[in-house]
Length: 393
Image 1 (cartoon, one colour):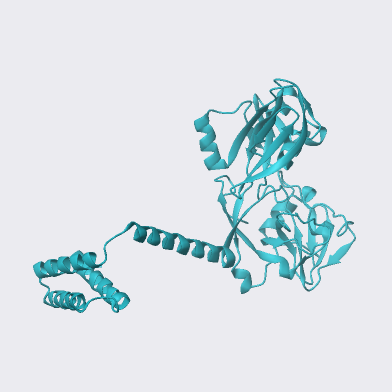
Image 2 (cartoon, rainbow, N blue to C red):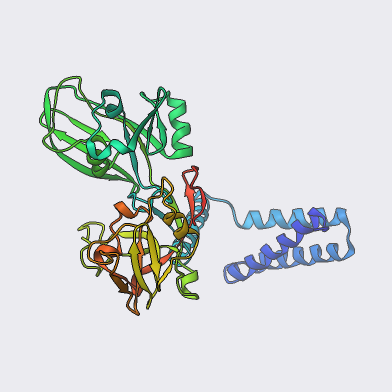
């Protein structure tokens, strides 16, 4: 730390010269080799004597000599840049494969702990045509409308505000207006850069490319194949919040077993009842680990019992409190379907449940998660910068 800058530079130059000699020894002429060796010797002597002027002179001479023998070409720049990019890719792939992997929360099964993709249709609260099954999602407070507790506007903000909201909240706005009297025949998903999901609305006279998934358009905006639209009619207008982006710790489960209460990610291959995507393969799910191998579980709404006791831990207590927006645990379908029925988790499996228990497709429907399917523990939300940003609990 206290070494002079010119001394550090000279030592680095000597190291570079030694490396150059090793690489080019068989291709250098005897005269060039002798000049490099002599220059290195002079620089070492100057460093030992701590002669500042001599250090500068001999270092400059050696540096010019090496530049003369290794002229900089455009090929060398490209080669160095490609090497840096390749190393960065290898490091990123290594980190993703063995340490941290990013995931996007697609559904609302872990809400409100983790958000999936949420769509806000302005048409519903403007025209008072909210579907019956979604009436409890919309609320008017004074002149402002709220969707699942989130404030929404009657119209999109200006472009600068939209950019700021996208960066901070992952929110984008859509406004699809029919140009003709037409009918929607098909909604085709389209991936852009392997990350952004668009939908192409194919009509008989017009097409639209919308930054939203087909599921979001159908569930939150009532955009379905067969829908008839008239000229000037709004097909979909509103805002869409992207799902929480999380980092999953793939490392720690190599040394310690999963803990009850962990939010964990697992593959769904070889789990009966979960369909595999023909293109993307088996989807990844993120749930809360409710039961370890050998645990006996029972649900008596809103409580979850583990080994005849109420489940312990911050996540379970928060859910069982049933304080809005949490609702407590709901009875299952195939498993834990009655308050007096219990289920014992097999030795090679884990019981997974979503915090949004009334709207979660989890182990209560298809059984335990095989031990081999576990990917890792949900560590933190890195984007968007909403109230969920930070460590996952």
